[in-house]
Length: 419
Image (cartoon, rainbow, N blue to C red; front, side, top):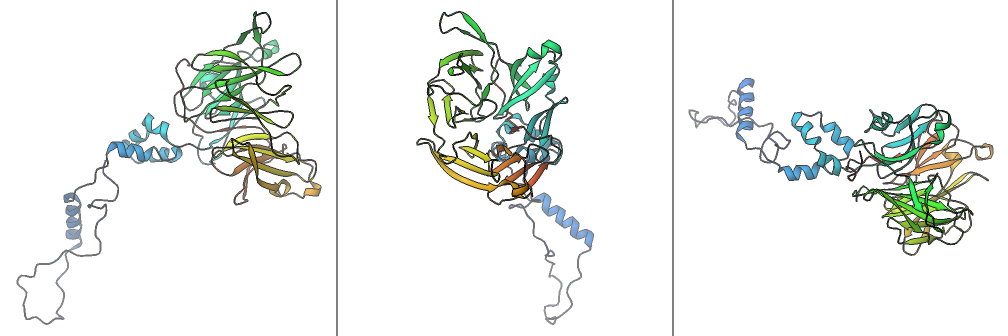
């Protein structure tokens, strides 16, 4: 493919200079201020320029270099390049380039009451990069709901039928909206710790772990509680073996997890929050267990967690007094040292007076690539807030996006064994 620039060894042509004229036949003794030679007609000039463009060699870019360049372009921009020409369409549709393109937060998946799945596109321009209705799942099941999103994969709960008693009969699947692949999770059947008899565990809280940078597999964590509500075991599902394996918990005695979607998968380790205000973690192999003190002594409340720019973050909103958001970052993971990163009065972000504000605020997520957070008043409004510039943008005022799973597309194919 020739480089853009319109010819010439360096991709450009000289402009503003007429071709030199033939001096033969002129009077050598003519006065220095004699009239200039008659200019070429416009048509002759155009012909001369075209001949110059044709004669000059073009600069070829090796395919390997072009692939390397395009693979560093954000995928949404790459989609725009498809409109240039048919060769560009073919090039930008190359699966290898698409898989390697850097991705960022595209939007939020959420469950809309009575209407199934919905997606809030953060770009605000054009359709989302993927079909948010998940047609490959909805064509097989009566109802599908989003439970969690991690690294571009979705953990979904599905029902064959969502009527009457069938509402209690559901299963779980992990899918990739960008590729249309999915894997159904098998039932958690494990031997009883006492007598070894196989037992089917019904678990409400599952936690998905997947890293697009290491796409060979995904894992799902299922903390198993005993009759006292303590999590004595954790079942781990691997997409490689397609089986659940039980590991005895090494978390502190009487650890009670918060559940829900309060989790963060970072560097091959799942991080979960507890009712005591601490954060516990376990790696994908079930070998490394840890409790991380929150380091927020003056608050001593339950926090939420996420990851951004390669670091674990925690945040807390105090709604008892004047609503305030506090965000911490775990700068030194080895020592477990937390650093207060940002504080802000939330009422100001929503344009309200703190002393008259009765809203109960919560934070949806933190952007994976920058210091941007997403907040909601749990009534109607959801906003984004840039902690660097302190800029606020309104995302939704209809009350639809109060709970959502942040989604970053992943075009890497899942490991074998799925659909």
